Image 1: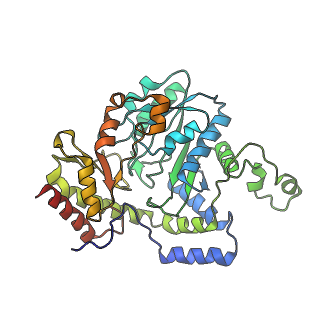
Image 2 (image 1 turned 90 degrees about the vertical axis):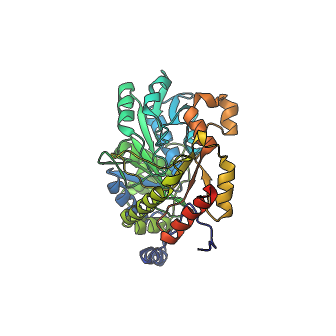
Image 3 (image 1 turned 180 degrees about the vertical axis):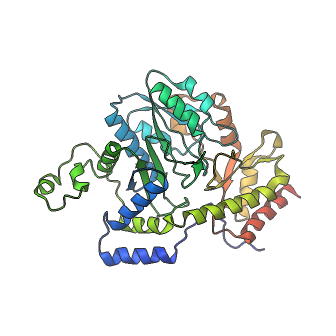
Length: 390
């Protein structure tokens, strides 16, 4: 097979239903918050066993209003601490810092790459207020022990599930364990709306503040069914807290709604592709750690993570440069604790986070998305065989 186009880590799938919904949104001549976004929010909340969902313009924005809402309602103080994993996208730490709080980093599990529950307790202090477990690469963190720790110490949980949706942990849906859970529908994610994200909760109080924060801190009456009432008219330009402009349009809502019913199909195809890659790449397991997950955790395979084993004597840059030259896109596995601004601010030492350090130096991922067929997967396998000269 001659590879002509780069095999990306993600894809954009515009179905006939999506085109139909987009055209309907345009025909409705309503681009601001409307029926498509509302239907998507309701459906997404139901899918994740929650009562409310607030759609915003990114997963980062969802995280930001989640932290801001809890800080306000739970009366957190400047300098209070929030536990985050040492491997995650930089936004997880940024949203904590942007609220005047302090991220406290915990090393991750060497097989799942998610926060290690056994290492959390040692990082809890009198100023700890919350834990943000991140469900990376499509796989849930080991969330039940984290919930137990949070309850024992009176901590809140914000699930950063931007890379994982529609899957279960011990029969319960990711995003249903936290006080607030956040998802992303950005490009290359599982549901793709171009830009977009959702904050999900079963607390009406939290949901009201989340929606207010996403809309400049607006009075909650604006989002009720009191349209045209004197009370609404009097209060529609009343702002009760400092907020943000994190709104989306009906276009993103239409795209999300069209994909929501297809998510089980998307996940099934991604898992099929991942199983095939794992089975065919097994001859290289002495060099590469391939994805794995416990039987009680479902995997969405937003991407296909690979970490070079320390004793393999293979430089990551050589392997990823080779794959890139063959038209196979690669990306680093979300290094966090080696970011320049965090190193400067917190004087982090790599040897304090040995698993994260290994992942940062040796980890990368490739795609296994639903638009890849057997020819594309076989091409990837062929390129690995050529690299290892098998």
